[in-house]
Image (cartoon, rainbow, N blue to C red; front, side, top):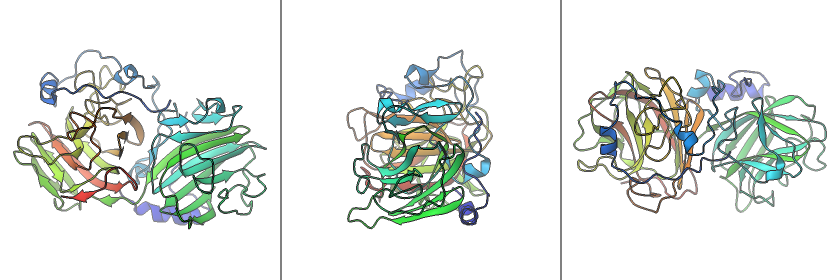
Length: 459
């Protein structure tokens, strides 16, 4: 993704000014837990389904809801501007539900009211992301009343007991004797220059880079910290804390950083056409164009645990494509043995909760044949943004910044992801699905997740 806007944002923050705010004003449990579906023949499934350009079928149930996933009827709030999407921001909080979050204690009372995450329970606790991550920018807003005690935990374990070893705890507590607001608990104290216990909303930007953290409150830098311990924390969960009183959070956004381009914008260096492909792969105006099909274009490098961000555009109605990952090397006989990040924007009866591509419906952002999306968030003939986090058996996807899937593959291990869980690194592959394929990809970037189960490599 384009990162050029970051330098200007950082300068504005240092000057205490506005600029491109990654936390627009608000307008308005847990991971899916969906089990992996039994293996089926993709070819047989797709032959019985509408092809690209054909009309949708009759009314369908809401597949994500059937899998026990929270799918609100109301449309989600607008989360990002086009510029913020281009900068790589995704939402950790969708403004409606706690989908993708895990509470460490049931009595902390985490809930959503009026587009806000609230906790005022009887027991302290954390609200944790479902996944771990290394380098990132975290933007959020917090409201804390007098006497409140909160914090944002970074690079944390699930159950941190020692803040000097188990996490980075960015404290939000004006009255803390040793580590007031803006400090890193048990690691670095700073003066209370930015009190926040006034019942007002305050913005925060936390930038985690390797063993370093730079933190801003209301646009002003309050902390710079370097973890120089023998075992510095460089990856882990993100957690919101209620440690006393009533705390509110909103506009909780994440931007993965440290990504590197997979596509240079001018030619297909680093990619190869899978033998037997009928698709045509060209570079036009800084994008990879795929026409005709079937066919596959795969990376020469392999990737295991990673965050992938890209933009794509279908150039006709009901175009079908996908991005395969952790795939075995493509051959003419087996061109695409990998997990598939689905691309198909069709939905039934005007209801974006009812993806209308194949079978019971999967939709753009789904892990095809494994778990459907909560909502179709993209449109044909428009550029859209996709983010995929793959971490061990855990896969999280976002489309236009909205979390569409949070899924754990519980199948027995198998080298072929069509048959079972694959943890080993594999290729990324762009799909030309059928003769009607007409799709563009651009700004493909990736970063590996440190400490993951499968490293990146070159075959």
